[in-house]
Length: 361
Image 1 (cartoon, one colour):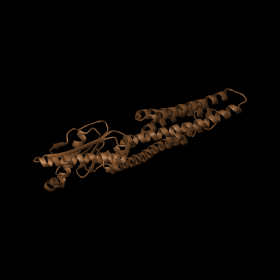
Image 2 (cartoon, helix red, strand yellow):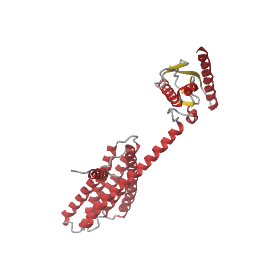
Image 3 (cartoon, helix red, strand yellow):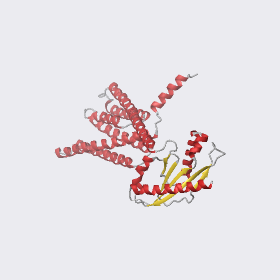
Image 4 (cartoon, one colour):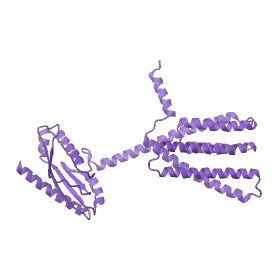
């Protein structure tokens, strides 16, 4: 029977190789991967282009080895150009899918590794080092965050293919198998560590962005009702200038009496219920808790609410109906002060309604 500690350990190992990553974190990792791939492609492209130019200018004859080298450089240039274009295309998409990035990274790794194998095999036949293969693997370790399980599979496949080619040439006599295996282990380890390191960095970045976004929201919204506050109103005013706006001021009748009779906790319930009524009735997203039991609504698209009173019940006060007084005014403000003059007119209308309704009670 498996004990709890063993189950937890197995789960941890599974998550290490098949991690479940938050969508925003994965998007950040993908964005980093695509940008680095694009930049790496352009750097290699520039280097190979210069090497190709020097190669062409210094050649006196074009024998078979020269043509093969030319073909190899041109293939590298084509891969770099294709990689840079594809990465740039994915970067420009607003909501690129995780699958698209994973497929791109996998193809990029396999194609470049295939090119490196071709070059290294040719160098091996010429009694040269297979350095190109290891350089490409190093680049993949540094800039390509593949899922750990994929890193293991792809690396083993690539190294195995390379070894088979070398073995078919001379039994891989020029290759130190122990060192080759160590390089495979180092490649896998490097890619896994790099992946988790990048995920950790992305998690901290996303967490910071979320914290900043929450602070920004809290600084501009009322904590009780979730409506915008006076600071948000000040920031929204420039967006309203030179637009026709209908302004509503709403007040809870006898709110002090509600607080005194039922307590401030119930008073808060009334304020929240009023805010919900405001959000339900008015289509505008420019709804503000203006202060205390007063609410301000700015409507830019000709919405009108013809009633100057409203009422509803809250479950904490089933025996008492909540009444609202509503004043409104409209205009096209040219500046900050003109908007507040419109708000003041709506406020005047509000108190006229309150006076009338109070006298009639």
